[in-house]
Length: 280
Image (cartoon, rainbow, N blue to C red):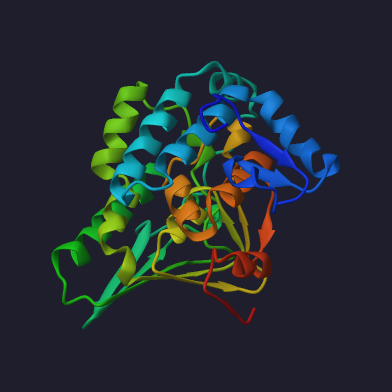
């Protein structure tokens, strides 16, 4: 079943002997319908997603991240992503915000990092990506930094990658090379056990993916989590296939990615995506 080049979805009892070999299991046809709608809209992205999840489930973290990036780059050159890019509404210009894209402050053994584009709901732009990767190099080089706190300014932690920058890479090979050299997830992975993320509000796409790799994740009660990339003809590209799978398992990750549905902080806690819920 896990050699089939498409999503394998079980319908019915999760205790069935074949259930572990499915990419995910849903209770009934009503729960299956929204998944099928997304799969039929972007079948190549859906197939790529489950193939990556199967292949990376037991890989070391770095190797899983590399494979995710390669798959993401492949889909960036595909017809499904190109169709979304052609059909999307023109994104309005991002608000002009003063100050650096992240705020980083060291106090002894503590390094505090804050995403600092509140007007844009901390959409992760190229500028923010580079600054975050650079900030995370410090604890990688200095083990006297025992704790790294990560949070977002404003109304939410992060709405994910800045949509206006999607499709701006010169080619897919360069896109992968840039992620390998400057992607925050590759800087985050070596220090993940020292990272404590505190998230609130929207925690979407790349924002949720980065948080999922942190050693401890606390969420405000009204936080919600979402992986919407299937709608763009893509899969997670900021560590989600690795981070989510290690926290909630391959099948729940597949459900979140194929459904593109939100889950609440309460659901995230029950599944293990977060470690605690804080007051609003």
